[in-house]
Image (cartoon, rainbow, N blue to C red; front, side, top):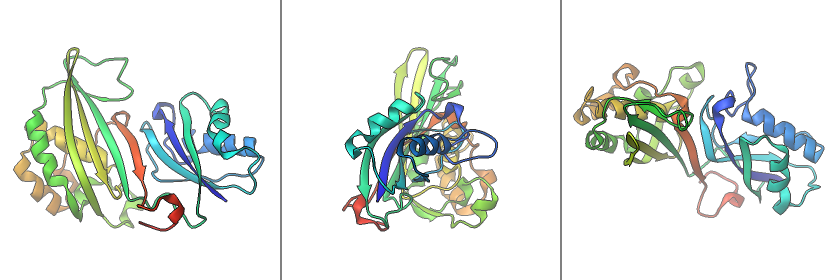
Length: 260
């Protein structure tokens, strides 16, 4: 049978979700822990391959189990007792054998920015720091142009893997929130879509920051997107500000199996 887990992790100490040769990844820690507890080899497939330093609240990962010696409703507690404190499983469910966790209906990310005169060591591992005041209104105007199904080549990092991927994605929502904090403001960019290119959300965040700093105008956004030119968009923001919040599957749920 195939089991789908909901996973949260602080990505600070990891080389991303996916197994790497140059460091410890979340996938490796979880697979080794599950293999030891279940006395069988475990290979996890995830909804998103988050980068080094990126966090997750609602990552989804599935694996095939030959036999379950642990009751499914007890699996999160048993696994959490064996995992390090910066990784946690909040739910486990049986899904159809044909289910693929990457075929999500939507994925939601948030990017957090501390916009203040001074950085905060207590929140710095979960947010980027921008000292100059951001124009939230300008950021919201720019964000409105991100919506829809289009070629997002201007918002992806150049990698060999990306060259083989279609750059067409659909962004369902892109919202900019702001609240007062001691010494400044906390700015949160929330982006939901059917899928994202490598570094796409971090580049969207960087482009909206440029709009907030007056480096680009909201009116330039359509031209930037249509150009497909990465050099015209904003910088790639640091990984620690990014968190995968939620992965949603089709209306009939994970047990439906196919792409929704």
